[in-house]
Image (cartoon, rainbow, N blue to C red):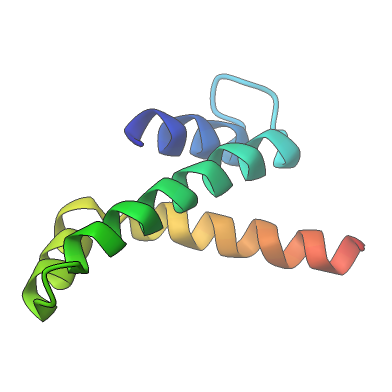
Length: 78
């Protein structure tokens, strides 16, 4: 998951690579999919705390913000 987030942000920001919204979107969407799956697994014991602790430990607000921005731009272009 960390590699997907890192690569997505690299392409999103254009750090050490040419900026590429499509590649950034692909990496960050895959990260989000895995993140949601693992978050659901953390909640499977019906504990509110397990979900909150998962967010605190593995959530990445910067990645989520970038993905939201890319989703918005993608919806505007369609």
